[in-house]
Length: 326
View 1 (cartoon, one colour):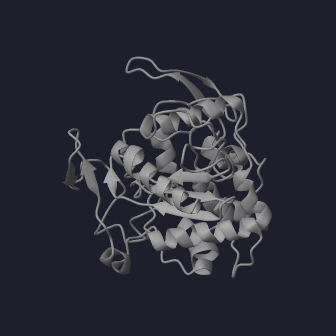
View 2 (cartoon, one colour):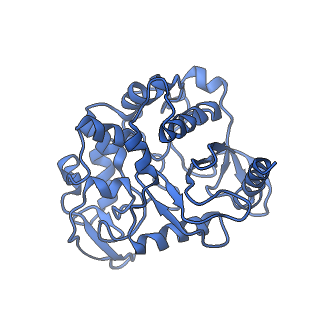
View 3 (cartoon, helix red, strand yellow):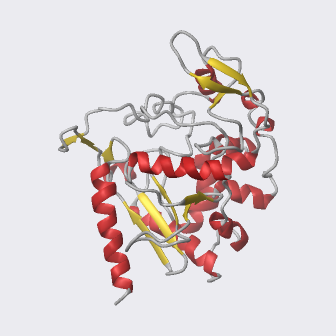
C-alpha cells in the first residue's frame, strides 16, 4: 500500500530498475543449487524492476527456518552483504518475473521517499486512519501486548521462551537507534481493531464509498484484485500456501498487494477475495462482492500453524458465510 502511494505521488514507477534505489541488486545471480562444498549459480538475465517487488516475482525469498529474522540492528548494506555471502551478487531463486516468492519493496519505499517505513506509514496510513501501529514496541503498546506461544511437536502449546529467532524484543525494540532496518513483511506491532480499520477502508474505497482521508485512489486499490502472476508463478503460490496451511490447491493469483482467490472455497471465502497472512498467525481477507473485511489473529509460532489454519480459520469462515445466507 505504501508502494502504491509512492506510485501515485510519482516518486516510484513500476518499470524502474530496483538497482536505481538499491545498488546491491544491480547484478544479482540465480542460484541453481546450494551445497556445503559447491554452490552453482549464473548471472541473472532479466533486469529486476519495481513491478517484480509488487507482485512477488523478484526471485528474492524468505528463509524458512527463521534464521535471519533478528536483523533489526543491521543496516541495509550489512543485510545485503549477509545475503550475498561468498557469491558475486545477491542470490535469487529464479529469473525476475518468471515465478513467485517474496520481495524487499520496503527498502525501496525508504529510498524513494527519503523516510523510514515507520515515518512513511505513520504519515500516509496510520495518521489518516487513526491507527496506533508501530515498528517499535512502545510502552503504550507493550501494556496491551499479547505474548507469543509455541506449538510443540506433540500438538501442545508452551509459553514463549525464544524457541525461534525473531526480531529483537524489549528492552531494545522500542529504541529507534537500535532498530536500523525495517522489514516490511514482518515486525509491525498492531491490534486487530487497527488491522480491521485498514481493511474496511480499502473495502470502501474499492466500492466507491466516500471515506475520510483516503490513503489511496480507487484505481490503486482496485489493482490489488488484478492478477499479475505468470502461469508458473500461480503454481508456486499455491504450493506455498499448501506447504504451510492447507490440504488442496485453491487456484490462487496475486495482485499488487495480496493473493487473490480464483475460485470459490467450499462454504468459505469466494472467488475474487484478496487475502494474506502474517508471521505470528494473523490472517485477513477482503471480499468485495459480499462487502466483507475479516481479520483473524493468534500469537502462535512456528509460522503456518496447521491446527489453526486447518481447523480454527475454516470454522470461523464457514460461520461467517453461513450467516450471510440467513
